[in-house]
Image (cartoon, rainbow, N blue to C red):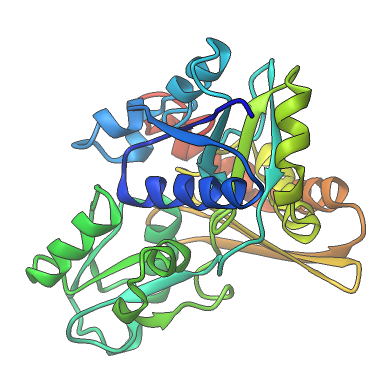
Length: 311
């Protein structure tokens, strides 16, 4: 059987994700290798992501490797993938989703409400920053880049009183003990696609599509398709203050969504139910635009180096 080559970023979490898919394929009798590829987002570590404004900053180089047949499939955190996949590629599978919510991590405090006024909280996500400031405007929020281990080391060194991280990443790396509080969707609406893995392939590669079809989870695909449809309707990427969480129950989807000013002074929330993932995402996105999200996002794009179309 021909070797299947997986393209992946080199962070500990990205390699966990690639090795997870590798193990699933090996159980099915495949020979699998992993090629580590450094992306623009990995090279730019001293600038807040929202100010970089590079489309596909965590995926471009991996897609180039796919196009050049250096790898056969790529494993991404779905939230890093642009909502419009580049021509010549497709998402062949979206795996069963890990907990999509955000987690509060702190060595000294059990939840956000316990933090004293002026406590230093680390996050480089405008989405998290905006919702944190709406919840606790008196907190001192600072940029925090780096992989999960780097962020946790800074927290353990008491450089921050708390940090906000994706619960999924902590779970996958075996660091659940760091979670002091899992934040509710109503308090901290997650990023679209958070907690889900996407397997990207060349559009014309029917062989790999067949081999990876088993990993596609119908409920995860429906929910994340809905979230990404909302994101696409709003014209935003994962580095703008937009949150989206959809959940499938008995064939019906429920979508919660959020758009906020980075300073937390205005937070728009909207929710709805539906059957069609794309239609539901677009309807909720349009409702938010009509309620003022358009002005919020124009202001965000205007203060960025370039409009961060996608991550």
